[in-house]
Structures are given as C-alpha cells and as structure tokens.
Image (cartoon, rainbow, N blue to C red; front, side, top):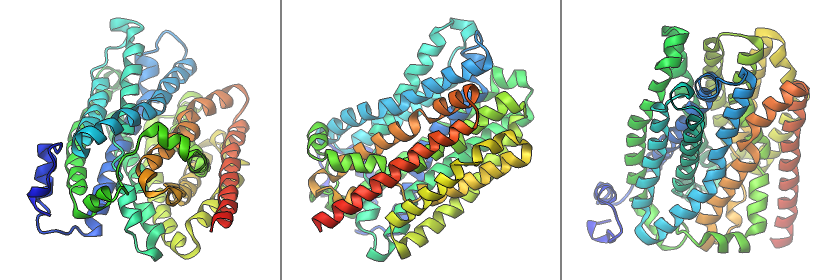
Length: 442
C-alpha cells in the first residue's frame, strides 16, 4: 500500500503508520501483538481503578461512612464506566464515519488515558467535600465512553482472517489483555503498598499507578494505529467488513443476534469480576488481611488464567468454540455451588478460590469474544460486534462487584454463588437457542 491511498480524514499518526507498510504485508503475529498491547492498556486502566475502589476511594472519597458502605459507593461508581460504553460507541462511531478511524482511535485513547490520569490528581473529601465523588464519577464515566469508542475491529481482523482450523486460537488472543492488564495493575499496587506506610500510600502513593497509564497508552496508540493502516484492515474496511454502520439501525435490524451475543458469555463475564475485584473487597473488609498478600495471589492467578486461555484456544480448535463455552459454563455452575464459601475459610480457602476461579475464567473468557459475530451480515458486523461487547459487559460484569459485595455482606457468601449461577443459566440458554437457530438457518 502506498501513501497515495491515505484519505483526507486520516490523522498524521495514521499516515505515518501507513507509510511503515508501504511494502505491503503484515504478519499475523504482528497483528496479534498489536491486539494484545491495545487490550492490555485498556484493562490496565480499568483494573487500576478497580483496585483503588477497594483500597483507596472508601478512605479518600467516602471517609464519612463506614468501610463497607464506602466500598459499595465505590463499586456503584465502578459501574458507571459500563453505562458509559454505549454512549462512547454512538459518539465515536459517528467520528469514525465522518473523520476516519485514526481520528476516532486517537481521541478515544487520549480520553481513556486522560480520564484515568485525572483520577491521579483527584482531591479527596477533606479538600472539596462531596464534589470529590462527583468528579470521580465523571472521570469513571469518561473511561467508559473512551473504552466504547476505542473499539477498533482488531478482534474481527484476526477472526475473519484466521485459518479455519485455528479460529479458537485467534479468538483467544485479544482476551489475553485482561489477565496481563490485571498483572501489571496488581503488581504496581502491591509494590507501593509494600514500600510505603499506610498514611503515605493513602496520601500520595496510590496516585502513581494512575500516572503509569500515560506511558502505556502512548505505546498502545501507536501499536493500534499501525495495525489499522495495514493492507488487510484497509481491504476489510473497503469491503464493509470493518466499516461502521448506524448504531440504532443495526440494533433494530440485528437485535436477535445482539441479544444472543450479549447473553452467551455471561457466565465468564460474571465470574470475571468475582475473582478479580470482589474477593479483594471481601478479604479487606472481613478477613482483615494485608492487601499486599492478596494482590500477590491475584498476580499469581493471572498467570494461571493466561495458561488456561492458551489451553482454551487449542481445545476450541479441536471441539469448537461453542462447546468450550458450554462445558466451561457447566464447570462454573459447579464452582458456584461451593467456591464462594472458601473466601471465609482462611488463607488456604482464599487461595483455592482464586486459583480455581482464574483457571475457569481462562477457559471460558478465552472463547467469550464474538461467539455469534459470524451471524452478522458484513455490512453490520463491525458495529454489531461493538454493541454485543458493550451489552455483555454491562449486563454481565458492570454491577457484579456491587451485587456480590451487597449480597455477601447482607445475606452470606453462599448467595454470591446464586448470582454466578444466574450467569451460567443465561450462557447455556443463549448457546442452546443459537444452536437451534443455526439448524433452522443452515
């Protein structure tokens, strides 16, 4: 591809990225690296907030209530990002259609990094009173809008061009960003908690992980701009495979596929925050443990999750993606019957809950992305996939930490298992309906 193919809507960054590919081809491995870097930066931003919502914001933003109530308030603000994602998709899809993908992605990633960095400068309740919570909510909503706008079609670029016998492997690659982002975030917080006194950490130490976001987002921006300038991406965009369609029109015409796609991964999405966010809040509030120890367990769990994800890709290429999702959902259902109670069984129980949870998460989450996206017609696939992702995260994960902590503290840990089981039922139901639909339309 030559520089002459640049459109008037291209940004200078996008034109520079396109020039890197003047000789034509980018290897699938390079695309995979770009996808992993981009997703890791997004999940890192989110996990930095998630950890701070347990260890920082109850004391800094909500010191006027007890620790449990402050954490519940923090989790309520946590959900705002998932509410903001659909708004971000609407706004940034318009920017995409009218000003180009490079403009859209640049603005979205700077909004994501800017919202996260603004949290690092957030005045506490002692400085500005309840306006601290208002500002935190606005920044969190900005994170969500940015993440909705940062949808770049990279998973579609991988899956649409994956060899027929390796679709499970390529579907897994974008999902690796979640455990890698958590690994970086948990390690940073563990480091600062380990070297600082509690007073210094709450005063200024917690702010440093938020500042790291800037460097990571700059690297991610260049990596992703480089990928959208590839000949493969241009070809798919020009053929409408990766071209945005009007969001409301897509929602009305493809509502059935969107609904199935949103409910199919709910078992893994519900489990996602029940092993990454909720347990940290529970052990901090009720086990009175040092958070450093639990963050180290989480970091170790992410490595188990990565290995399980790699396994999910290989297994899916042998038995099929839907089979992996279905079997893993049944296993999560069994896990929901006993595992939450392990959080109240001391250090050994907590470790068993986390390691087994991360293993199941890797198997299920590794194949949860876009399981029904091939049922979208080419002209709506790009926007339809974005709506599916937003809907699944909002329904399955956005309120999970809040619901789990509320249920566990007011009813008991066993009730968290029922909450998780509801996600399993949704997944199995959606997969069953999709299978029957496939029989009728094939």
